[in-house]
Amino acid sequence: MSTQPDIPNTLDPFGTLRAMRDANLQTWSKMMIDLVNSDEYSQATAQWLDTYLSMSQPLQHIIDMTMTRVLTGLHMPLRTDVTSLAERLTNLEMRLDDQDAKLDDILHTLQALSTTNQADDASVVTPTRSKNGAQAHTSTHSVRTKGTGASASHTSQADRAQKKAKGDH
Image (cartoon, rainbow, N blue to C red):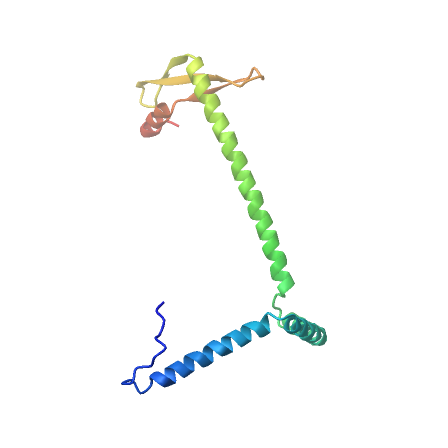
């Protein structure tokens, strides 16, 4: 910032007025900063706020009771109703997020299990007949679930697409 020279320009008729204005504003600014930073001011403000809040509390209670009656009469929700609903929706959203994360974990586990089982198991090709009598080949993989000894048969995606195209379900 540039500082203004102390010597006013003699050709500027408003230069003296500007200098007086700036000096006046600077004096007021220093005085107000000193006043606001004083202990007496903070104590007086605290006392005034305490009195104001204690006097306005009964009025606030009356306004709240009146608003409750009016909103209930108009069949409109109260602030507590909206807040309660927001909390319930937030809780529901968090539960859905948790379920989504669990399902993602299960999906990744199943994909990893399927990949390892497909690599370990040999595929068996069995001939089948379609509706028109042509011979189609279905590739079947035996998938064994860990620890249970049970197995399930899965038809490959290409074979399912081929069956769908021929109309054989």
